Image 1: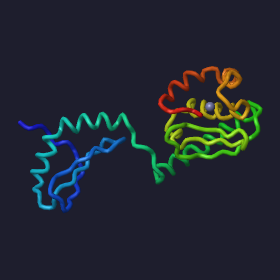
Image 2: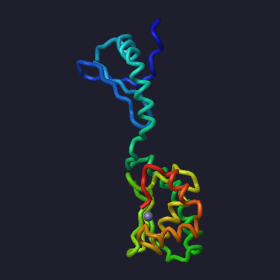
Image 3: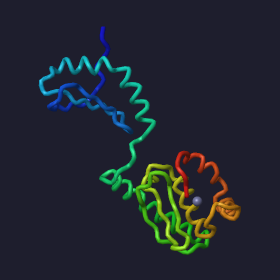
Image 4: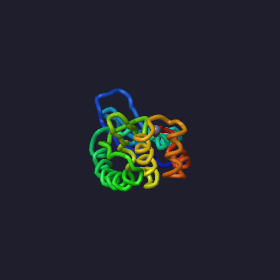
Length: 179
Ligand SMILES: [Zn+2]
């Protein structure tokens, strides 16, 4: 007996062959099929690829789609802005640094960055998806760069003084650098 048909969304197109993609990040299955192909044939075709789909979906969920400008990024910004503002208000006086200009950006390889000369710090929009203590780690890290520009012993001393658990937080943010 054939197994169930994996759920999919169908688009009909002027084309000769069926095509299928599994979306990165969501694992959603999208099928494009020729205009006249019978529904049962499409179902059968998708069903015959069930093992492949299952494997691709595991892979897709391991590799979230890169965040692009749009409603999702805007929502993350709205969520993150007040949190960052509150953290900066707390940590700037505590660390005794000048209040920096700051902004949020879609960043693909880093969680944050700092320009010491310009006294400006930048935070990744995707921090909105991270736990409170990890956002706080990135904030403290960037503010520490207003004291020490490089990742030298002086920088680590500032981090140890203000956020002793920072090494564990860094490990939790694996994959991307906090610059
Ligand atoms: Zn750094």
